[in-house]
Length: 441
Image 1 (cartoon, rainbow, N blue to C red):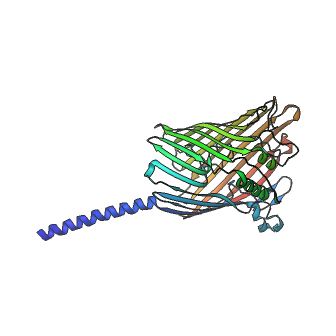
Image 2: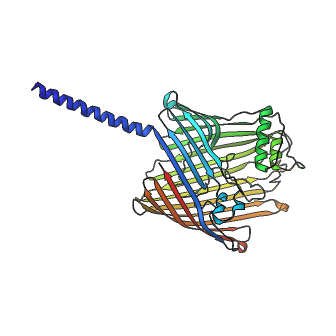
Image 3: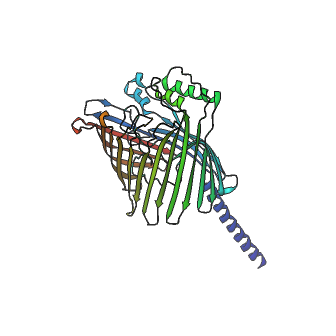
């Protein structure tokens, strides 16, 4: 009898130990994860209303184009690296070898590491990254811009989408996360260059940008700082953002390439601030709304600084099994000033951009699904006697998505873009056949 009890106790101990081992393995799988991802996006064929036919030269459904990344996520530390390939360099596939160097063949999208030396309450990150914590995405069904402020475009372009200076991301440098219960505080500090190191850095950047030897001498500083506070309210989260990048005006003038008409002042701070609320209290519904302000501050006292504003509304709905719907809407605007130091929006001038997109994905089976997206951008700049710029871009796309295996997916479809400047009769229509491949392990 004693032997039977002994055997039963041993079996129980083995069972418990096995359960603990399985639990530990599960936790280990959840905490220690090495991931690889390759995403290829391009248009197999495109033709426009002016008779231009091309292939493999644009990014198709996804504006990010082709990307390859490797990351590791552990319990206490992690790292990530990713490269992007410009689709201009795929022209050799269509025989245009001379044009394969039209754009950068390779760009570093991210390269950073993070560590949690004291658990979840403190996290240090450093490198090249884009952090949008506290700002809900809700763009699974649409190929979307980031949240932020659209601004007047460079080189006569009607607008510029939210970039690192005008969006909601804290980018590049050293980021510290401090967790205090339901509140998280993030502080960003980028490398601070000065003196000869700054001169060499900018000279090298300008040389790469222009393709010719450039030399810039400056004793001024380059500085990027930022911060974000995020609070969990139970029904959602609220966050507030501030960031600034300080640049010497000598460098800004050199980058603009117009030494005969230099911008005034010694420095400019690209200051960005905003507040965002993500509502998640209703099942199957997510709503995110926010305001972003962008103010290029010139330190010259006798100039005006124009404020650009962007208001975003994102939402998603998954109330029907196998169906998801996402939308993103942005209104961005600015009013000119008499002494606008950038010379873009003078007294009485105005800038306005309206962006609307909606997309839906329907799961047909576990392996197959379909997606459709409708998007439109309208931009208008009224500069009085200097003239008006009106731009409209309409896009409609549909694609079929096949999950070939657990680690591979393929998509293909049709896309129509209609682009016009002021006169719909002169609109340029482009019809394309985008394809995409995603591999993840």
